[in-house]
Every structure is written in C-alpha cells, then in structure tokens.
Image (cartoon, rainbow, N blue to C red; front, side, top):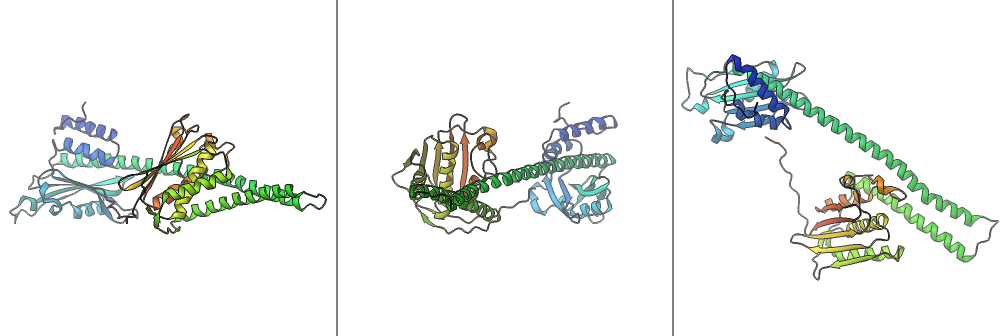
Length: 415
C-alpha cells in the first residue's frame, strides 16, 4: 500500500485508513515530519483548514503551541485566523474531545469568522499532555468518523512523541556516560601528568641536597635544568586546567585590539625551536596581511597549542603553516605530515578531556589543548576545524574575522 494514497470514508475502508496513517507514523523521522506527511493524505477525506498541536510545558501547567499549519481557507489571513487556543485548554483540562461550533443564529458575513473547531487530547498513560485541534471555516459539522480519526491521529502523535523523548533520553544518558568516562580518564591522566614532573622535581632536588655526595658544576646545572623544565611543565598543566575552567564558565575576559597574526606565529615558532632545534616548520604568508581584532595573548595560546600538538603527534614530520587573507576573515592552516587521525576520532577532538586512544599511547597530555583552542576561537567569533587522513597527515583550519561583531539571538520556536 502506498503511503501517499488518499483516504476515503466508509465503514469497510476505516481499517485501511488507520493502517495508512500508522505506516506514515512508523516511517517518519519525528512527530513534526509525521504530521507534515499525514496532513495532505488526511485532507482527502477529512476537510480542515487549520491544524495545531499544543503541548504542556516542562512544569506540566501551561499549554504551548508546538506545531501549526494553515492548509485551506484562511491561508492568506495569517495570524488573524483561529488556532483553537480556547478549545485546546478545555481539552487539556477535561481530558476529553471538545467540539466548538459558531453561533448560527447570528451568522457573520465572513466564513473565516465561522470556525468549527475539533480538539482531542494527546495522552500518555491516560493523562493529557497536550491537545490536537482542527479548524474549518463555514462548516460542515464534524462527524463521529472525523472524531475517531482525530483521536487515532492523537494516539499516533503521542506514541511518536514518547519514542522521540525516549530516544533523546537515551542519547542524554549516553552523553552523560561518555562525559563521566572522559572525566574518569582525565582524573587518571592528570594524576599521572602531575606526578611525573613532581617526581622529577622531587627526585633531582633531593639528589642535589644529599650531604654524602659532591656534585660538580656541570652536573648541578644539568639537574637544575631538568628541575626548571619540569616546573615549566607543571605550570603549563595548571594553567591549562584553570583556562579550561574559565572558558567553560565564560569567565575568561578577552582584551580585543588590532593583532598581527603573522607576528604571533613567528614568535611561537621561535619559542618552539628554542625547545626543539630540529623542528621543521615552514611559514607561508601573503605579502599583505590585514590585522585582526583579537586578544594577542589568547590567540598566541591557540597558535602555541596547535604547534605543540603537531610536534607531539607528528614528531620529526614537517609542519607547514599558511596564512591566507580572505574577504572577511583570516584563514590559518596548520598542516603536518604525520600519521594522521582515524575518521571516527575527528568529531571528538575538540571535546574537553578527549584524547584519541590510538595516539595517546606514550604521549603526555591532558586532552585540554584543542578544547581550549576551540573555546578561544569561538570567543573571537571564529571557527576551527580539522581534516585528516591516516598516513597522510592532519590539517587544522582556523578562521578569524577581521572585526568583532555583536551576536544577535535567533528565535528558537519552530512552528
């Protein structure tokens, strides 16, 4: 049976009608898609001009319009037509079907002022959770068949809503489980990461303090250099933790000013080569680069993180950094020639605490660097993306607007 077939009213066809509506419901992605697919099929035998769905709010007290369609007469009237708000309230409060007819003793001149409204409850476990209303202008009256078909549609809608709610709940629980797992992994990782530099600092400091040993100047300098390096590592870890918390809560202020991004990158390369002289980095810059409006300290942090990330996961591989001036933004590309990242990890790389298991082996890190990069770039109203292919390297793309623009909230209601 085709799901797009028309319906017809007769006792022998009622079962076919219900089957057709049920099949549409089963094959729809969500309840709104279901109604959009059912409306043209339903109107072949059940004439109505408006259809609206009202659902109870999260507190279970008030009805809110969640779906509305103008199908027939009154399409051009827009917001002036009746959506059956009063009837939906009666249906919800009484938990039963309600039919409202116009006053025919004093009929108005316009058909749009003569709405016949049918409302049926949307129920879950016998309790009303909303109302489904139909309106048609100028008649005729609703038949018992109309009411039965409307009630069946409300039951389909209820089942579809429950299925969608259950799916959202399962997804929420899965997300919470994954987040809890990430946090557990993070606690284990950060404990190891903190203990490692502390162990070095403690060990070499204790060695230097031994009274039964005499260390020459070169050995002392070597030990103190290790202590300084591990202290810097410890400070970096603590800074990342603090920055992550501030960015997550929105408490990190940005000091916007004109910034030469090419200068920031050159400085970052110099710092990186101080720690690793053999670092292979090529910088490709256009002749003329306009400045961007940004926080130089935080943008420098993003650049440092992306360079450090490449040196960790693509060690001994060359890194190409390209700066491309585009119409409204500056496009930065950090392209390494390392082993690449499997596709199933890419969607999670910018999540807090996330570290790709395939790459995290024997590599020190907390899974905060890329999260911090994304948060900083987003606070600059920019975007950061990644593309990678196993065996062919990884490229991070950063897009920074030249000028900061205030964001305007978008309307959330979907009718």
